[in-house]
Length: 233
Image (tube, rainbow, N blue to C red; front, side, top):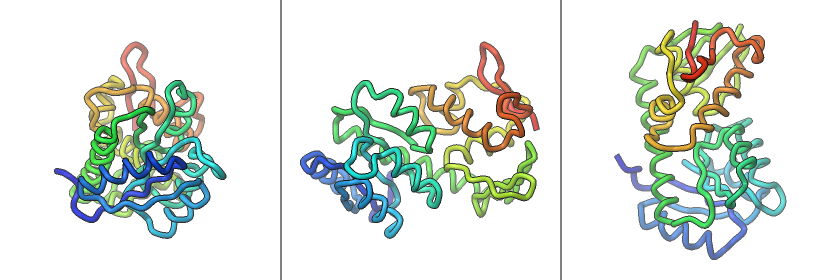
């Protein structure tokens, strides 16, 4: 299902020509679009208006895209699609580690970007529907997962998870003992049949750091050599 009318996208990019083209395609697909030309303004607008999604360039004046994403993730689980230049693999991985939901490499087709935006919003909506229709609470790995509040507590302390980290944990808890290939997790959690499996690796590492007592010797999120990962409660 395509995103509903009136969903709001904030485009944060210092190239006015690119922003205008991107905005035109997004509006054509039914989105309301707002703009910011630097990281400081973009972060302030995001926290003030809470858009449904942010298109965020990595290279920005003031705060760069990574710092904007880092600060945003402390307070609001807004989906983020990052824009990166060709060859910025380390920055892409850093963005994914901070919780970006997808990235598009410049130069890109505005139609492709609009399609990625819609796909990320569909995944976010599907995750909310799944959570609300399931049992309201789950437990595993010493964590209490509240699907309604979208919160995780470990030993009584709130754990700050990004949207995808939360979805990945829920998937594992509801499917214990099974070894998953990275490609299977990419499709099950992200909805991608094809894509960069380093996305899974990065999110799995971050999730271990947040819920394992010792991330270097995990007891719950286990690596299955030659296969992928398995969850043990």
